[in-house]
Amino acid sequence: MRILLIEPSKPELSIGGEEVFLFEPLALEYVAAGVCRDHEVRIIDHRLDKNLDALLDDFQPEVVGITAYTVHVNVVKRLSEYLKDRNPKVLTVVGGHHATVKHEDFLCPSIDVVVKGEGVFPFQEIVSRLAQGRSLAGVPGTILMTASGPVHSSQYPPKDLDALPLPARHLTRPYRHEYYSEWMKPLASLRTSRGCPFRCRFCAEWKVTGGRYIRRDPEKVVEELAGIQEEYVFFADDESLIDVARMTRLAGLIREAGIRKRYFCYGRSDTITRNPELLRIWRDVGLERVFVGLEFFRDEDLDYVRKNSTSKDNETAVRILHGLGIDVYASFMVRPDFTREDFATLRTYCRRLDLNFASFAVLTPLPGTDLYAEVENRLITHDYDLFDFLHTQLPTTLPLKEFFKEFDGLYTNAIPLGKQISLLRKYRLNDIPGLLVKGRRFHERLRNAHLDY
Image 1 (cartoon, rainbow, N blue to C red):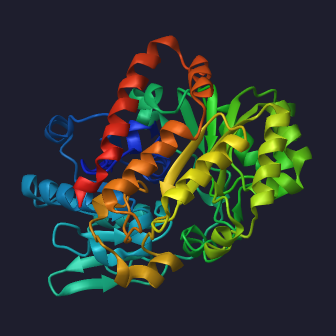
Image 2: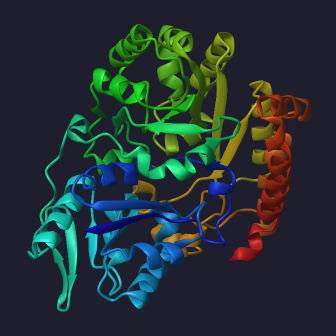
Image 3: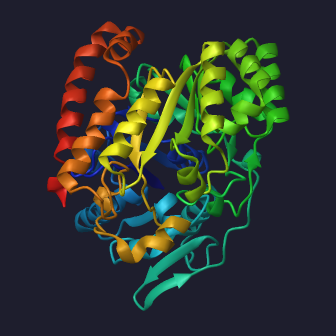
């Protein structure tokens, strides 16, 4: 069968996204790996490649699979309608994070099957049944749209990550040189674990895995890593460093294999604070950068989101990483009820930490999270196009125009200008003009985000 998998682009109203970073469509590469041995499969990254019409004309897929985060809901529904208009016989399948946490948003005539949870094996069975002319009803982990309404099946039995095939990266070969995060380009993504043992109110990943922290065998990770061509590698885990013994072993295996890469991963501040030796070990095998969700500068805000870390953990973690020469990708949130004084205090806090780089997001009540369940009746917008972490979904204490002016000020003033300029040295020279253009566009959009409501 001819199968097309689509990584959707962000909606026009959304800010950031692929304009700021671009990771490979790892989920689709996993799904493709489950069917590409027996079927003809293509992946189109619609963030980079707008020639969908030409591909549809040339390839004429019988099955189209699309993945979606919350911000993609409207885009994916319009895309599925377009696919059905072109070819009513094509089977449209939608999966991904949002389909898992709020599947009802995809129960519409243009979407034939919704996949909840890990999609590799359900999609494999869908394709197998379709090829054999069998009914698609009852495929575990799916919801089938029928003339009489949606037919729900049982949950797909949990599988170890080691049971998954290696991602079919050859299908994204035309795009691989374009995947990046800031100066790390080209950047490959690799999953070493899934889930998280913590229970943050703003996150649903721990719910998706039933509260489990699922680990891959380090030998399997090294096997996959040895086949990756890119110099930079991002560990696309929900949190990479929690299992200290496992990560120590993985670092040792990488050293023994003689693999030299430059790594980027997620790490909690309290994990880093308790395990500085683990960070030293990883620095010595190539860890160059850690994304640390510092989130807030006040303990009461950290407690509110059940982060289970403290502002002291944040400060200690930054100091440890700086001391090891590891770049800190510091990530903060702002609450919609922030005042001007709160914004000013956060700017001062960032400068006191002596950060070279920081990103800022609005505390976002994503569907599936405890936070969403608590505040759903207070939302000022239900437009998923605005669930991009840079628009607010909740009422602000400041007038919206002033809120976004202060928010943009974090990006311009929280890091001293000299540090921002020195950071440019990490980029390739020919990337800097485009970076500056993107930066101007980003700030203009952010300052005027109040007009999007």
